[in-house]
Length: 556
Image 1 (cartoon, helix red, strand yellow):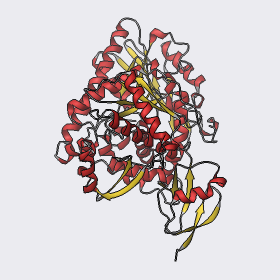
Image 2 (tube, rainbow, N blue to C red):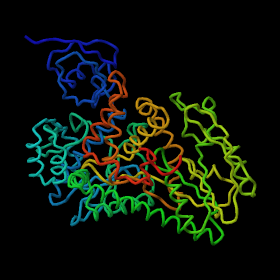
Image 3 (tube, rainbow, N blue to C red):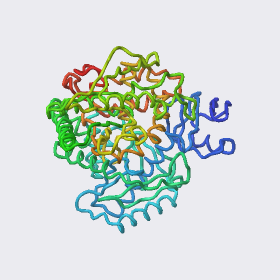
Image 4 (cartoon, rainbow, N blue to C red):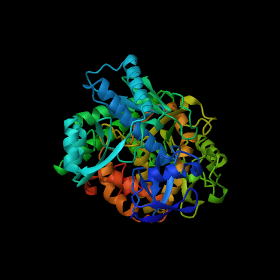
């Protein structure tokens, strides 16, 4: 006798009877006319699950379309599985590496010894189209990790073997497509036939996997040139290769073999070297009559503040007098802040700043006047004055830090030769494994969750809830101007996720199970579980990471 149970479906706001053992996919097929879309995955009790998930107990279920954040991630991961199958069939000697999001796509390479020509990319794309049109199943399996390790070892996926051997999980979930296995830290689509809106584009020494824009379903984004970002990315990839820490497995091995302090030291030394180079370039321009104002910009939690302070120290060693201003202190009072499309305060908007007061103060400083600078209190949402005064002397150079520093509208009245622009981005180049990259947005979100909890009295629930609005603001107000930079500083540290794990986990575990933000908190906890914890005490007080974790020698 088959047991029946009731499932509450959020999409239709009703209880639905199901047979015990019925899968989410089978339930979705029954509800398809009422859902109005074909789901790619579902949220079960506020936790993301694949459609193969069986129902044996009462649950709250919300089916997710491909345009949702979780659905879009499932779509991209599924395409990566299809890409791996196509490459392994056509180019068995190649080593597919999915590196990072860039130029509105996901940058992929085929490893040394494989000539990645436009013709090669076209062949791979055609094979992927064939797999999609065949509507093959993406089969989910949960097995003993020891068995999964043997499967991946036979396929030559040494990076996955190393990861699984260092995480020590008893069971591992993997997917099978047409005889090839792979693992991902999230759900995949049930079948390849769902994956219709994408293309491959030749790019540099590899290619871009370009996927539809969730804001415009059915449309592929146009290519944008990000040459400076590409150079910053490739420089770090080379550094990671030399250090021998290219992925989570190699990082875990280093920490477990007591090389953690060495990894921290070499990563911090690279940061210092990069900042020193930028300082030398600024100084040269200053001595040639330009670069009186340095604008340091970047998205949320990229580390702009510490970068600015460390840049100021390097400029001092070059016999200049840095004077620091944070654009955050020019936020208008909270109740006057513009709202975004969701009705939330849009702190990423240029017009969340008091532009009139900022330009008045800037003009006065340039004219040699003394100015009292404001401070913004994030807890009260008010701009206050505490007697902090500034005056530019001979040899002074003004450092202005904030997300809008590269926006021409911020300093339109300042001659171009007087400005030097620095773009700060946490462009994470270490990967989980060859087919699972670490999104820059996840790295920054974890930084922000820790910082907001520690310094701004904001819970992880609230930070996670506001993050989509932050991301929309970045797309509108920050990213379009990043190639305006005179220098790009990659603020990521290859060890940071191992250090952040023990700090972030207790905060994320406080997210209640009965709120929708729980699914994102659970995903981040799963993501962090791939990294062996590292000792926070090894991180120097001058590290950029201290801006978020605490213990910095800088005053914020």
